[in-house]
Amino acid sequence: MELLEKYFPQLSPGQYDQFAALDELYRHWNEQINVVSRKDIDALYERHVLHSLGIAKVVRFNASARILDVGTGGGFPGIPLAILYPDTEFVLVDSIGKKIKVVNQVAQALGLNNVSAFHQRAESIEGSFDFVVTRAVTRMQGLVQWTHQKIRLESLHELPNGILALKGGDLSDELRRYKKASIYPLSDYFDAEFFETKVVVHLPL
Image 1: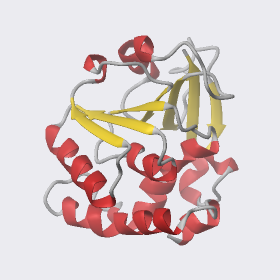
Image 2 (image 1 turned 90 degrees about the horizontal axis):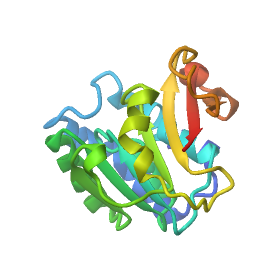
Image 3 (image 1 turned 90 degrees about the vertical axis):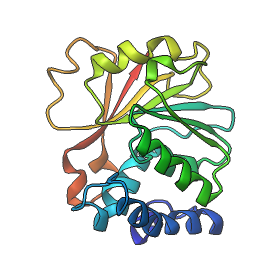
C-alpha cells in the first residue's frame, strides 16, 4: 500500500480501503483458484495492482467512458482501474470461467458497481468502448483482430480511442506493422526495478 500512496496520493479514504482489501481477497481466492502466480502473491501491489495502474499514468478516464478489459484473468488491469475511476464503466472478459468467478466475487466484496464481468471471448462482447485494456494476453495483431470493431469512433479523451496494452520486452517485431503505436515506458512513472522493462502500448483504432 505504501507504493500506491507514493504514486497515487490523491486516493480517497474509500479507495484506500478498497485497495487495502485486495491483499486478503486475492490470498483467499488464490488458495482455491490460482489466479495470481504463487511467487507473485507477496508482490501483489507492485506486480499486479501498480502495474495495472500504469495505464492511469497514460490516460485519465472520464466518467462517461466505457472500458473493455480483454483476458482479465483475476481482474487485472480492470479491478484496480475500476477502483481508481469509480464513475467509469468497466467490462471485464475472460475465456476461463473460474477466473471470472473470482472477478465477480472480488468486485462484489469491494462494492464496485462500475464493474461487470463475463465468461466470454472478446469478439463476442456486444457494445462499443472508448478503450480496450489488456495485460500480456496476446500479440497486438490478435488484439486488433478481436476488438477493432468495438472501438467508438467519437473520442472523449485527449488520447485517441484504441488499445492500451501492458507489455514488456522487445516489441519491435510485434509493432512493426503498427506505425501509429506509441510506447510509454513505465520506468518513467515508477522507479521499482520491476518496471524497467514494462511499457504501455497505445494503438489508436
